Length: 114
Image (tube, rainbow, N blue to C red; front, side, top):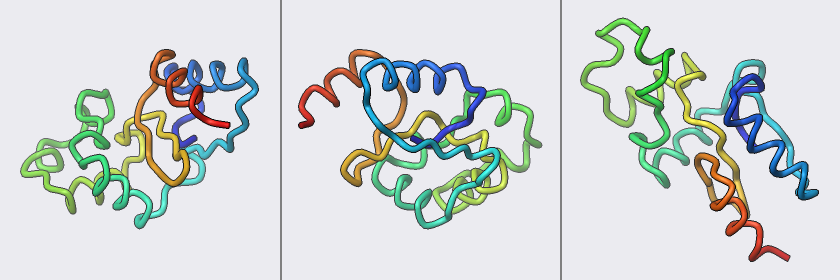
């Protein structure tokens, strides 16, 4: 799981996984950053528009020049510089990125796993 330790949604997702005995490794963007290649792959597979959290406080507080004319390359550069702009949590399950958390989506995702 990729996210930020203090994010409420990440806390809920981790609690859900812990309560069901689902093992996972946690990668905190704030302390460990994120590899460009991984972030670019997520943006290709999910769309940079979904991966970049433009509704969050961090994004809203950025200078207007940083927020304008975003495309995939500029969004990746922005997310590398300001990791709080990456939506979270993001799980990689069988090499596939799964963005966000809802109990129903996680239940469906993990009910089909051995």
